[in-house]
Image 1: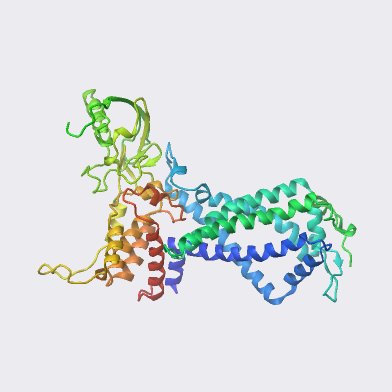
Image 2: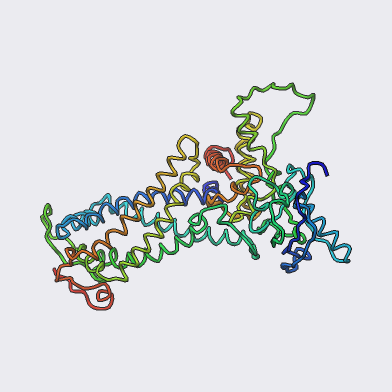
Length: 256
Length: 261
């Protein structure tokens, strides 16, 4: 099947890979955001913990989690490889004077930089939430009872509530969402262009949807930690009242 | 001079010009002064004045590419003050006039920069990579013989217009020069969509896009990331829609062509 590998490694094939994985990751952001917004309900984290348990145990979701990881891995690898390839294509000697700001958007020219910032954020974010909720060795979760579940579930809410009381952590999340917003600003419409979906009938709609999507997604993502930081109602349960700094350095107190 | 502006005052300018002996030597910016430049001159005529000065002083003139000086051949290729073909929208360097600049200005002049466009000398760049992409498939095969009658093959007006729009590409390489990734995608897409739209181009439709994209990659051009600098700097206004058409053509060719290798 050499024609398949030839297709996927050609310059157009590679951007099609970037576009399909990128748009797939956009759909993931929507699901992630909807669950994040549950954090802001004044129910002591019951809804958030319910959905966190659902996402961690539902077999369809667990399967999609693997697909998602592959999507991330391919998007990240391909993005970095393309950035390297494109830098080489530009040649060793750059322009002495280049006013590219007069012919294109900043976000469009800095997708690799924005993506790298997001990768750093992603690693920190996964270490604190995903790794610790999946592997007891890396922190684990205290167990709490939530309505509509007959068994206790992991208290991921307290991890979030504790994390988002740390100023630098909230700042990190807010800054990362700015990078995400700019990344989506170019990425959303760019994905459609790459898939050959450009037509005067619907391209303006794609552009405006993309711009609205990037603003709404990044603002709402950033809002969750900021609101939880300033509102005293959102407190971690005492049993797992460790800060992130503690959880990274001390033995976790896991209640079973 | 007919049509010249009698009120236009001659200008004195400082030029920062990229000088490079040959393909392998290192280049650098050299400063020159030019005096009494008429605002009615084209940018290339201003360089002619500089070269005459240099020759009078016994110095090597600045090499730069030019041919028709009418904006249709695509030979002139200067990166002026950080923009391909200079600050004007929709013009080639030869159609850029000195009235767009002011007395006392400093103008930086560089060659196109891309790994696939090696510099021959000074501002002259080897763009034969484009020729090889065209040779890979940018043509239609026809039977030789008598001249065919006009309108023998009916083509709807809107299709003919779109194909013609793509056909206006003069292959100057400004798209590559302006692109952060030095991608030739706008050039290739103009050629591919022009021929894909017309019935004469349908015979080689699939092999054409496969071969031209393969040659484009082989030449070492970068991959397109839809930044849009190319279309913004294109002197003839080739639109990004052509790249979307190229992507469609490429995918459908890859999925349906008989080329299994």
